[in-house]
Image (cartoon, rainbow, N blue to C red; front, side):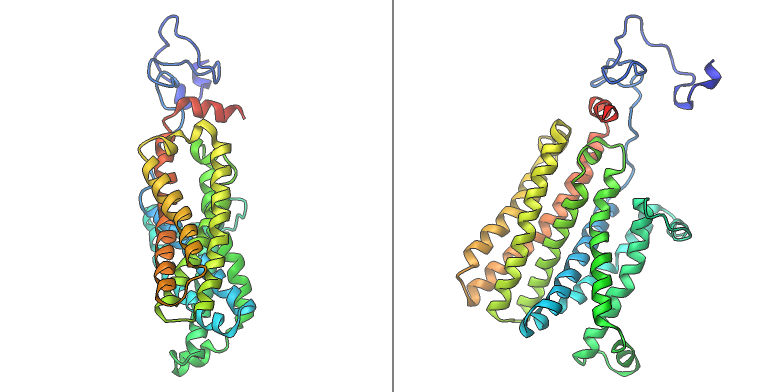
Length: 343
């Protein structure tokens, strides 16, 4: 009976006589438009997220990467490495400042963010992300304050209180939460029914590798401005290169798994920012610059390190923005939606 049909199919006009059915399902007649659909109604709802989302993904990822880089230096680096990379705690805290406002702005009402914190659902990427951001932000600020108190920048009662922060525990907990924050954004997109986002299972890993690359680049940039030793810059360059290589491998795997579903990203109007920005300037160029800087020192090393760091940070933003925006175009690809539903 008509009354028992799903709401989306009620009161729709009958298909024209002789209209073929979509190859995706016998339940979805193909319309005359490209890719078909249910009487030309979209199979997938167009995403309504705006620029706040990729910006939040980028800043949160960079904060996580900077925190992890600084924590690794504190536990495994030399005395020079610890002094140079400790600024990563400041970078993480500064990058996290706009994250909650951006997330709240995208949700539309502040109480929606509060409502997500009323329950804890680790299997829900959005709920997990809200909790992770809420937990990671105060830890990053506390560890940054602890470092500031240790160097004499923070004095008085706040400095005394900051010295009580258990640094090793804060670094361990911050790394776990930071990596979760860096990767959950890709998992969140992959949990939707947008073909470009959901086809591959590597999007979370790709965003995490990109976060480590941009975060370590941000640490390198602030360390270079403080005039650290060349040996420390070389070690930071090695960490950046390792993250960039991992990012390149995951980009390749992501495109291979996505197949023709990735066409809005690789051949559409977002191909230039993806290939030139995310892949070229964000991954390949920093690797080349670090290769040239390997046997350099002094001013030339610092110039190459700065250029590579800026490219990595800009490429990380281009990666998230191009995948995010191309996903909106992918939502109009009816055949890709049908293919995804058959898997």
